[in-house]
Image (cartoon, rainbow, N blue to C red; front, side, top):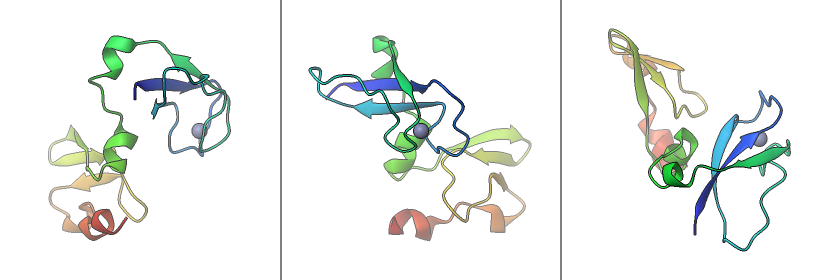
Length: 106
Ligand SMILES: [Zn+2]
């Protein structure tokens, strides 16, 4: 099934899938009008060349990946943060490391 990119039309701070998310649907289906998670209005983004290779952080997370993006020396932003995890991972502070047990559990 093709993977489409959708964009929230309004700010949706409580939605973990804002501002953009990927959505798989059959070609014949009507585009989504509302976000499946928060119900906010969304529109389809047309970028067919990009959607095949680009993985969104939420998809990575759903597939059990952890994505860390370096923001400073030894400090990484956890882009696939799960409940109970710190937003920033500090190499010198093991308590900020992603919780592997949670990833395997959910
Ligand atoms: Zn949403």
